[in-house]
Image (cartoon, rainbow, N blue to C red; front, side):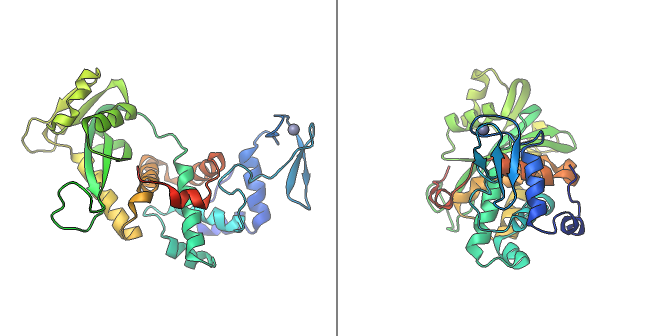
Length: 303
Ligand SMILES: [Zn+2]
C-alpha cells in the first residue's frame, strides 16, 4: 500500500473521507472483510450507510469499530492528518498547532485526538534490547526548588538503551512509581533479552539485584570518558533529548499523561532510521489499538 511522503502527496492521496475510508478498509482487512462476529470472510459494502455486511451471518460492521477511530465525529481526513503529523514531525506536534492547522472547533478535540493516536502507539511492541545496554533513571517535571525526592510533581522515568559504540540502538522508557530496586530491576529485566545482554549502570545499590537475576551486570567503577565503562553516555544523551523535546513541543506535560509521550518519543527514536515509512505503522497502531474513550484518558492515574 502506498503511503504519503509529503503533505502534497497526502492531499493527493486523501482528498476526502471516502479515500481515507478505503485506505483504512484495505489496511484493516488486506485479504477482504473479516467478520468480527463469526470470523467469516467476505462482505457486502452498504454504500449508503458506510457499513460492511457479513456474507455469512449478515452482521454489520463499521471499519472504524474497535479502533481508536471508533465512534468519532471528527472527519477521517483530520484523523489521517494527525497520523501524518505524528509520523512525520520529528519534534511532534502540539494540540494547539494541530487545532490551528486543521481548523478543529476546540482545543480539547485536538488534544484528545492526538492522545488517542499516542495510545495506539503504546500497542506497538518495542524491540527487546540486546548487546551492551545502559540503564539509568531520572526525574521529569516539577517546579519546586530543592526537591528532595518526594512530591513536588516530579515523575521518575527509567531508561534502557543499547550502546553501539558511536551510536545508540533501540531504547525503552517507562514511568516508574518509585525508584526502588524491585521496580528498576524488573523494568530492566522486562526490557532486554537477558541471556544476550550486558547491562551497564551507575554504582547505585538499587541495580545490584540484576546479577542475582542472572544478568551480566557491570556497575560503573568511576572515572570519566567516552566508553560505556566510564559512564552512561547514551542514557544521558537520550534523557537530555527527551527533556528538550517535552519542553519544546509541549511546554511540559502532566505526569498523568507522561507515559503516552514517552511512547511517542520511544517509537520515533526506535524508528529513526525508518523515517520514510512511519505513516503506515502509526496508522496500523491506531487500527489495532483498543478504542480509547475520553473519560479513560482523563481518569487514568500516573504510572
Ligand atoms: Zn459474520
